[in-house]
Length: 343
Ligand code: NAD
Ligand code: 89Y
Image (cartoon, rainbow, N blue to C red):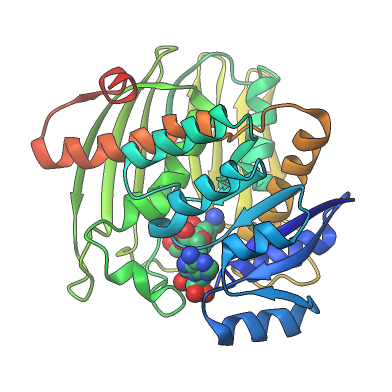
């Protein structure tokens, strides 16, 4: 059993802790939160006796194989660098940092300390997205030339995560980041970014609508669009929808996890509904199962000595797309990814 500790016992960490109970080969032996109330509520709920207010004290006192950081972005760099300084493998929630500069420093700190580092970028681990990827890998629709990754909702995310209403940046940094990672997962790395953004909800500070266009290095073009201002007949939260066209056919992931692909052999319909884990609740269950999947992947990567799919190094390419989207929206210009990644 690999022994881990969790830092940050807030809203989303509950999903981490439920998942850690289900992951094969790992257990959480200690938790840390600077907020005493959260420490007590979560420690009691998950029956974890070792509780710390200070991450440094916890990392000194406990013998750990890894640490799982589930705080919000402003604290990520200091906590990841702390883990690296102690030689402890580290997972960090998205967005990895407030700036690309910080993200690069975190990746460098872990590389210098030879510490495995994964960003908890979980949407690609949703079973519907995995099923779509498997169909593409089997060559069912040929070579992809166009794709769309879309997340449009009017779900109230602010009651559970009030900080989302406060930042100058909102939907691309918080949610679009997942859709951009899914685009990279399905269509490959991006060469450039064009983005347009706006705020519709007057009660928040950041943008809640974004439309992004990417050229991928294999020649495909994609649209990644997200909105928290889209009132639909049936609320879609938190489903990521896909439209993909290839030289031999097409694939669609429509609302209610309806996956369809068409090629010369005809059309196939697949129910890509996620499992409802025993601790999960709708509509969050597709996100919740992806937390279990990514945490299991982390343990397998640690055990096998392999780089996790969304390692810090890999995630720089997703996070740079976020930065590029804000730059492009602010200037109206195309942003070349090479310029951001090499600077
Ligand atoms: P939250 O504010 O509810 O919880 C954060 C907790 O961290 C708080 O209890 C706070 O007291 C604690 N904390 C902050 N700094 C600390 C420090 N230095 N040491 C110890 N404790 C500290 O936030 P949340 O909504 O749970 O979000 C946490 C992260 O999870 C964010 O980065 C968010 O973007 C991410 N998130 C990811 C997903 C996903 O699907 N991957 C979904 C929701 C949220
Ligand atoms: O924080 C966000 C995330 O990562 O997934 C959905 C969310 O909770 C709200 O946009």
